[in-house]
Length: 320
Image 1: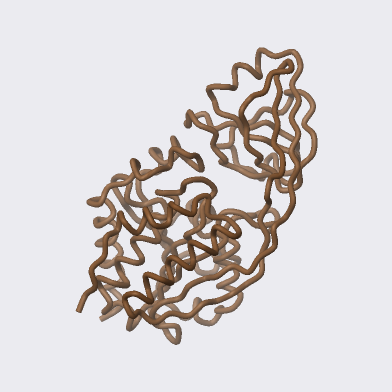
Image 2: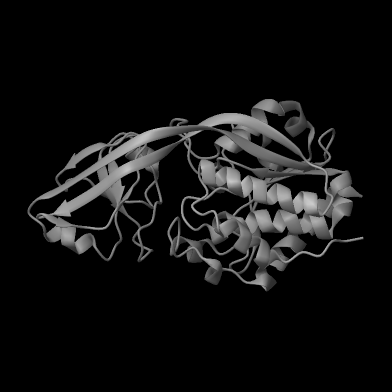
């Protein structure tokens, strides 16, 4: 019998641990496991070691006046001057090792769109004019790596799955759409359509947002699963990542760019023909990306269920 499940309530449960990094990510994992246990769903945990940056200090001044900012660096240090002001919508690899002050031109709040292996801070686009007008600009960050054991949570057929479906549950900020929505869609499938568990594997993935992997610092949890389950992924018919869905019209994407952004595994080039990304309105997501604005207001139950139905239709092609 299908279990009762409230997708919005599940997302609210995850949001209480936001931002879901390090210790808070572990608490989010324990929450997911509690839901599985409460519904008598079998699961296994893949544990792997990783690190995320923790900011001890992030300070930005324009002509001696403090400007609100957040750390966006793996290493910390000093940024002297305003010669390197960049849009965080520009691919991070272009400025990966250059100190910078960055902002998201689509988002009114501070948006951690990119991280860098050089001192950097993010500010809001509304405060950017203060920096541009200032004669003297200086920023400083102090960052330490936090080492911990992350948990990928596996539900379903881990022997010979037709499809493997991933959704990361960690977040840089509030992370309702990115990506509590994806975790909620997977949980809906697990509880409401358990028939798919017989021939498919669902992976609630940890440590997607940040790691010290260089240059592709995101997606580490996917690659940890890949390293431990290479033959499983090679033999599956579909590899599906659910990310940033439920905020509008949902669809499957399969371009190289989208796969690189949402599912950067090492062997994506070999398996491109069977990789799909299920996502929602990405232009809408840009306006709240990795910021406190990515709240429940971005989502609606109808869109979440439409995404789940799209996923079910895709899995049905290979499941029965």
